[in-house]
Length: 633
Ligand code: ADP
Ligand code: MG
Image 1 (cartoon, protein in one colour):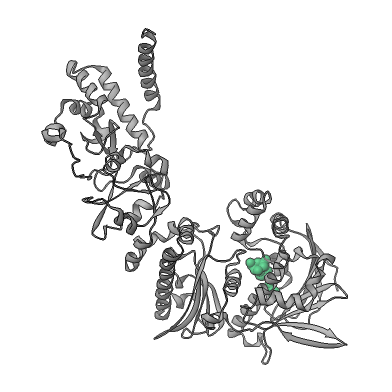
Image 2: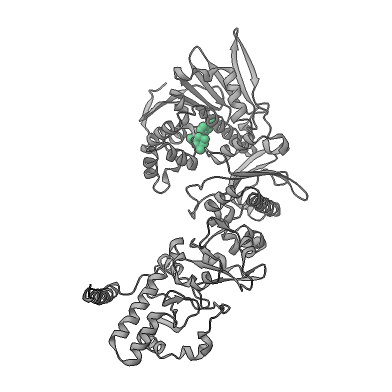
């Protein structure tokens, strides 16, 4: 046999190792769950490959996982007769981190080392994995032989900087992980403890997990789990913990799921499955190349991970498993794409999930709020892409509302609507604070109308797919078409808009602002503010337009908006008086420009010429301060 070769871990591995140990030292037992989960995957993968290459899985050989404690040597071995690994695979799979390609991964790792809480968050996103072995062992050997090959190799490491690989002997294909357990964790070797851990963490595993012990020179075997697919059991037979452990295995998550639904469908298509809603976003939720979907089994045999065809993109946060009786075992991704069976499964997963969410929203509003803040932004995509479920999704929408705590549904909004309120109002922008201070809301708030606040970039698109809700149109507080009923005692507009529009001051505004605005007109929506900019019908919210332009790298001025002027405002009336006296005053022009800049600021847009605005402000302040200073004390 040749000498062992020494390899160095990829730098990230050292960080991950430290992170796992730092964050999970109080839960050392998770190592077993991780190693059993890997063994189970290895068995699934072999069984699947053997469909095409039957020689890989000889007749009479049962896939199984063995737990072999050796109290004398202080070792625990977790062995499987699964797909195994070649020397190259050992070096790659156990020497690098698969997810290290993710953006700013190392940076996140570093940040996470600082606190246990952050560490657990990160582990929640990426999974714990093989390196959890070092929670209980200070030396780990992995002896593996890839199915279909004759050579076996031993990977060894103390989990610090380097590992070695050398040739080894193994009778059959598969992998044995040998943990040299630290003295303080030797209780992990007891039958009682192993049985307890398997029952608690690994009962979902469909393959037998056997405890192998030597007693009086004889080998004894005991199966520790039920070894049938959890999703094939009746829901009443499955405990919450068992669902949670299945989820952790499927999602490689450290934390349990937020909610799940287990279903058996019997009709033209027969299938069973469980869908899970995670608690946290995966790191790649907004990565266009992100994989998603369910694990697919056909007649209990694992076929595909991340079968995207089973789940619409706007449910890409879901995890779970589907087991079909009808699909062929040799199903390929191509075949999935135009299969009727797959369409049925997808519809079922969609409706099961929407029902689950709807129930959660009724029965566990706090959980639902958490869901909404985590994944609502993805769910909203359905409004655009899936007209069939639009009505259901609309009921699941939640928004913040001006001046109110918490989230509001459209149903709640409508129930609170004032007598005679013509529409459901919303305002879209970049932050709650900016929206609540926006002049556009003044008249609505004054009439006691609620305004929904939309701060997701997708909101303006999503909401444009909803014409009305329970017969009430949805209207943006920022658009031109905001016809409000007159308030009591609101008499000043008796002169009629036609006359008001011809107001000489407005003519002056038009002359000064020229092409910068589409129109200048009297406002009915303002109370405390002199002016505001509104979006013409069919126009786009300025923050969205800016975002789109940034994405498409387009330059130039935004679409033109309408300037509304509050003719009842003292400032505007004063301006009108000055203008009346001197129709050509350059100061009136300067003030009009300053008002326009201020309207730009209020809607969150950058002003065209910040230096000009700064100059105006200085002049104005100077004047005010001088007057104040000259006043007798
Ligand atoms: P994950 O399971 O999330 O991929 P792990 O750290 O648990 O991450 O395992 C890393 C990789 O090592 C696995 O993806 C798999 O390729 C390989 N591996 C681990 N254990 C086994 C095993 N018992 N048999 C075959 N391959 C394994
Ligand atoms: Mg794993």
